Amino acid sequence: MDLNSLTIDSTRTAIAAKQISASALAQQFYGKIKAEDPEIHAYLTLCEDRALQQAKRIDDLVNRGAPLPPLAGVPIGIKDVMVTRGIRTTAGSKILDNFIPPYDCTAVARLEAAGAIVLGKMNCDEFAMGSSNENSAFGPVRNPRDKSRVPGGSSGGSAAAVAAGTAVATLGSDTGGSIRQPASFCGVVGLMPTYGRVSRYGLIAFASSLDHIGPLTKTVKDAAILLRVIAGRDPLDSTSADVPVSDYEADLTKPVSGLKIGVPREYFAEGLDAEVRAAVESGIARLRSSGCEIVQISLPHTAYAVPTYYLVATAEASANLARFDGVRYGYRAKGVRTLFEMYRKSRDEAFGAEVKRRIMLGTYALSSGYYDAYYLKAQRVRTLLTRDFEAAFQKVDAIVTPTAPTAAFKIGEKSDDPLSMYLADIYTVTADLAGIPGISVPCGKTQSGLPIGLQVLGRHFDESTVLRVAAAVERP
Ligand code: GLN
Image (cartoon, rainbow, N blue to C red; front, side, top):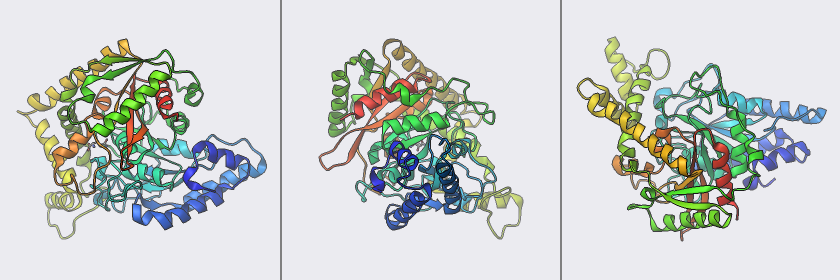
């Protein structure tokens, strides 16, 4: 089997046709991971026992001629911010270095119920805070397309494994762009569903009103297949939406001609790399030749999105991360004499610099006297950003933009400059703030061969249109 070219679609066909057993395929993936991943470092933990047990279950179904579930035998990796029963889950942090969760994240449970084989847990920025995967407590991930460069973040391991062919697909999480931006940097597809479309039960919280789980895959079709499995109401997450889940794969066959596609002028302004612009424009040209009507639009509050995001996200993070206190689980400092000293030293020794920076920023923005000026103001601007999209979607069916202002940057290039790192999210944070779905799909390459992603945004719960438009860009 050529593992590099396997898609979900081709894997399940090969398993069903008995070209390979699920067990043999999982073994081949582990062989490839052990040979190739030490250099990339996309995996933090492998779970061979659990994977091979599940593979055996699938092989039994195949041998009995029983009907196969939609992901039968498909090897998948899980970003290490989703808890897995009995399998170490770190969130990329030293504070959870030895954490073995007692339950499964709903998205993971749904994948396994659909027959997927969970190979292991993917490296990521600590608590999903970052745009380059350099904030992982366990060391960075290298971009398989150019190993001197970052894979993007925070789902860097999830994107790199798909690009390297060490997983057929992965799950990532997106709070400000962490699925779409690494997908763009690694030349794969990354889908952030509508807020509430996929249960967050078992997702270690970064910023609860912005967190989303979604797939990273080689093709748009694979993203459609995975989304259908993980989407839908979950009684364990009260923010999961009770909105019907479509057959996204079938929806892909509907034509895109006649769709109105908005191109927001604010996303093509200063700071956009010329090669990225050219590649995205060629993607837009493909949509035009598929019969889409391209419309210039404006999203006037875009300039406020990054500061708004970094206030809301850090405020929520400061509250969510209060639970890591050394008492119930995770790292506990040694040789302390008082309870307060135990809290303080545990957090000081086990959180990384970026996480501490955000806890301080968020605590400041929420503190009395500053709350109105920062947090409340940011919430108001968030509403304005959402209204920008609502007004735009009166006129257009989808919006197309670059995913990131540049292609993948060098490891170390921005790690000493948090502000320039934050600006890498300029085109992605808006969709998280508005709660709308977005996808990054490869649309071209730089002269030196680095992948470039095009972003498609859609109306709340209209992942079908987002996927269809992305598929039209993807088509050669
Ligand atoms: N890069 C952004 C941040 O650092 C987004 C992270 C994310 O989406 N998890 O917050």
